[in-house]
Length: 192
Image (cartoon, rainbow, N blue to C red; front, side, top):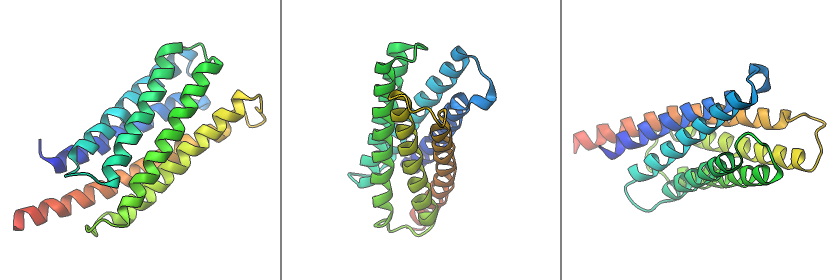
């Protein structure tokens, strides 16, 4: 598969996974505990696969590749917490998921740094905004997890839900940016 298509398909899978995990995390959808667990698990699997595929599509070592790999590791950490503890929602599961969210935020901010040095103009603004929002969203989810873990439930997880949807908005914007960037690079490849 062409590296441009790997990045586009990877970003698409990540976006779909982000939306799915966020739907599962949102109490307003009124899922039972098992349904919420399934949505979150499958969503994180899609995000991890998408980030790994995007990283594989990078031509060589770069901050973007490192960021994509870090995001995949963060999602894999969340998956580990979900699989080890299932729907039990224990303190150990919360700590693993919090760690996974922090790792994802680090990956988003690492990929963001790469965009400032990217030679492709198309999609740069969207990728900067998208990665910034994803990093902020993941950080808010991690902070919400810490609040819940230590009994500070005054917001009833609303910070985490807001973080989830901020991450989703960032993922959608970054997908648009990735499509624009890869389309321009494909045009340049054809003209060479």
